[in-house]
Image 1 (cartoon, rainbow, N blue to C red):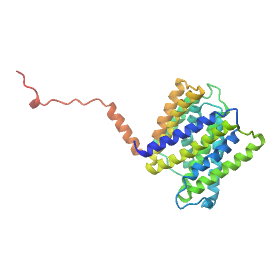
Image 2 (tube, rainbow, N blue to C red; image 1 turned 60 degrees about the vertical axis):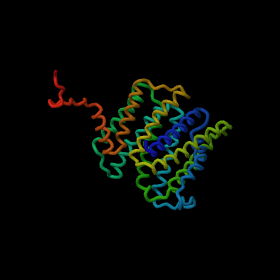
Image 3 (cartoon, helix red, strand yellow; image 1 turned 90 degrees about the horizontal axis):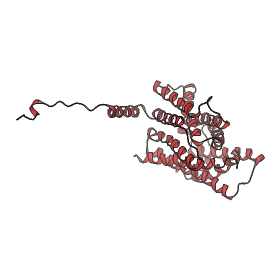
Length: 309
């Protein structure tokens, strides 16, 4: 297994552990407090990702100030919504809805960036959406505000991703990281004031762990992108579905039913096929065809036939 894929799996596993810890705050701390303290605790690991030659004092020297601030605001809003979702609905359901982000990214890329999308990608995206419907089953079960929050997170995530693709080649990493962190601290800090409750020691430790998971996961993800192409790194994010089921079952007694498991499997398979390149997808289908093909019948030449006595 390529080293970059290992790093990406570690990154998404660490992210999932942080998400599971956030779920433990359900009913104890508000969304804005969680966002404020985890943003502060994630700053230190993020500072280690600063490239040589860049300085944090240049954070606000931006090439695209409005787009960069739009990305920061969309990131803050998406984080708020996903925190609310984690504290109100099962982990696996949050991930299944959050993985609608590629659907919204493709829609924005067509409408805003004027990109052309192939028919297979549309099919895979539609299949992912159908998988999400199997998990959530609107109209057949009660839906909560957490489900809408997870969908909102996917929408803001698509804005974040689309803007990032536009500005990343021309913006410094200290700006990409620092502006978002500043917005997260200030916005959450202001919104948490009316209902602020001082966390106890155990909660502070948990908040520090969430921040450490976010910052450390980010470092592993950077290492992954430096060690492997995006087509190998991107599919690793769907490992979070597995982490969600394992952590949800171990700590929160969350057990998806059989139909939900089918839906989660559909989301994972369609999502992976969507993010890999056309060449990689072709190789995968060729290997599957070889595995399923019957073994060829090799005729025995008369000259090689065993003579009868």
